Length: 226
Image (cartoon, rainbow, N blue to C red):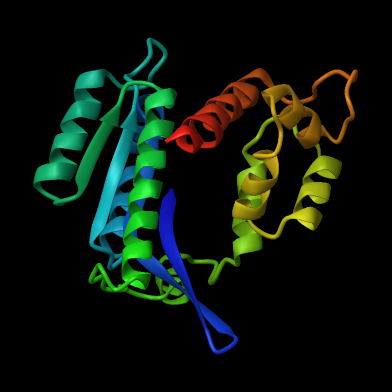
């Protein structure tokens, strides 16, 4: 799930507000599994109760041969989500396209935030992140550091020592993202993640490496050329 936020700082204090964009990303196979075990309805309910203005599903790729449901069933579920639940649906063909779309949204939210600061855009701050989290998370408010830790857990092959080192150095993903931008090659990023200076075998799994590489190329290289 992706939630875009603005953090406003004034008089020595700060408050984080939801920017109104909430995305539930699913691969077609993941969505098929959630439909089958009932999680799909629970997830839709939480999205509908978020109180945000732009809430939608991002469906990535198509069902594989090993999918638990046929593609037609997934398509019908997305049609119902769009027409009956009034949630927006975005379909991407590949993970590359997903990353590009998320980067596009990130740039849009940033531009709107800058316009708000410059007095050129009238943006309604819909609700605080704390209020959103209390309402939607059964475990209560998740701090930014906790979310960043959960994100690192998704990278298969990164050990506990590397994860602990990264969390000590960076309180947020933004800080971590700015750090990896200083590297000239993706191989340097991998060595940084693994806490090596070169020459040692990479611990990160192939699928995590591929996803990080796509994100790195799109967000760090392509956007910086614009």
